[in-house]
Length: 465
Ligand SMILES: *Cc1c(COP(=O)(O)O)cnc(C)c1O
Image (tube, rainbow, N blue to C red; front, side, top):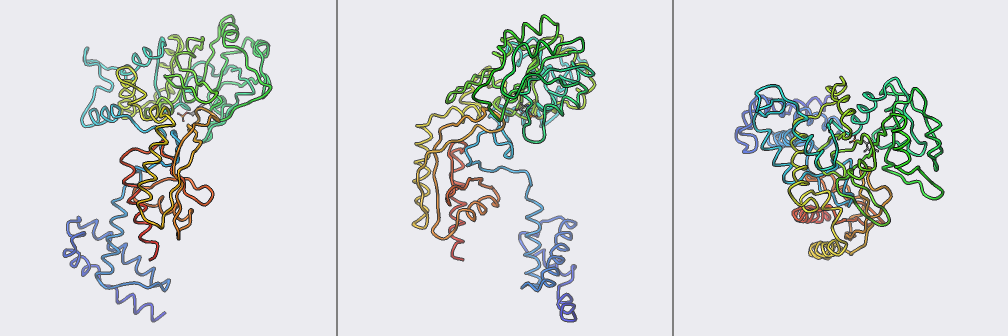
C-alpha cells in the first residue's frame, strides 16, 4: 500500500507534463483544454496500471506517450470505411449499398451550403422535399405517384397507417416475414392500428382463401416479399391477375412490400427477381422498397403506386416523423440519375458487383493470389471457388458463383488473422473457413488490394515479436 502511494507520488505533476508536451511534435499544436484532458486520462491510466502491478513508464516521456495514444483514440472517427472481403454485396452490418460516384457528388454539391430542399425556386414559395425525386422515380418505374421516407420499414408502417388503420389487412401465412433488426410483419401491422387477418397455410394459399376473408372491414390485401427465406416443394400462391381482380372487384388496394426492390430485373441460378415496374404493371396498387438494397442508393423507403393512395400518405401526420433527410435525398437523386442517364450496371456499385462475370472474378482472384504470395514464404495463398449471397434480404437462398483466395500463415492461426485484420484502422472483414481466411474478391475495389497487402505485411512482421 505504502509502496503504491510512493509510486503514485512519482508520477509527474500535470503542469510539468503540460510544459513538456510543448516539446513533443505530436502534442505541440493541441489546444490546451484537450491537452489537459488527455494528460489527465494518461495519468489516470498510469495509476491504474500501477494498481494492477503492470510495468509502467511514469517518466514524463512515458506518460506523454500514453497521452498521445489517448489523443489518437479521440481523433479516430468511430464510423469509418472498412474493406469488405466477405463477398456479401448487401451486408447490413457493413452499411449495405456503397454509393455511386454521382450519388457522392450530389451529397458534396448540395451539403456545402444551403439548398432548395423545401423551397420552390420558380415561385419563391414553400416547396416539397418529395418533389425533387418523385417524378424521376415515377418515370423509371411507371407509377402515378411516389413518396420517399426514412427506410422501407417506415414506408410499410406509413402505407398501412394511411390506408388501413382501424381496419383489416389480409396476409398469407406464407408471407408473415421477420427480417433482421426485429421488423416483423404482424408487429408492424399492429403498430399501424390495422388488424391482421391471416389466410392460407405456410406452404399454400389459394385465391379462395383471400376471397373468403374479405368482409366489410377489409382495407387491403398485403403481399410481402419473402426476402430471406424460400418455401420450396408443395407450394402455391395465387396468380397476380386473380388477386388483383379480386381486390379491384371489392374496391380495395393490393399493397406489396417488395423488400429489396430492384429497378432492373435480376437473374441468377434458377431465380428471377422482377423489376419494380413489373410489379406495378402486374396491378399492385402500392409498392414499397428499400433505397439501400438492390436499388443501390442511400437508406430510404420508396413508396410508389396509384395517386389516390399516395395522396393519402402525403397528408398523413406520420409522414413528418419518418421523413427522409437531405443527405439521403441528394444521394438518391444521384442514384436515380445513374439509372436514367448512365449505365447502371457499371455506375451503381451494387449492380456492378452483382453482375461481374465469374471469369472476371476468377481473373481478379488470380491477381490477388499472386500479390499475396509475394508476401513471402510464411504465407500460403490458394485460389478457391466460392458461393456468395447477395445478402441484405435480397435474392433469398440464391448462390452467386464467386472466386477468392484462401490464405494461411505458417505461425498465425486463422482466427487470430481474422481478428488482427478486423481491429486495424481500416478494418478488413474476412470469413474463416477450414482454418483459413477467405478473401472473396467480389466486393473489393482495386484500391483495396494495397490496403490488404499492407495489413497482412504488418501482421506478418509482428509474428515473431
Ligand atoms: C429489408 C426489408 C424491409 C425493411 O427495409 P429497411 O429499408 O431496412 O427498413 C422490409 N420488408 C422486407 C420484406 C425487407 O426485405
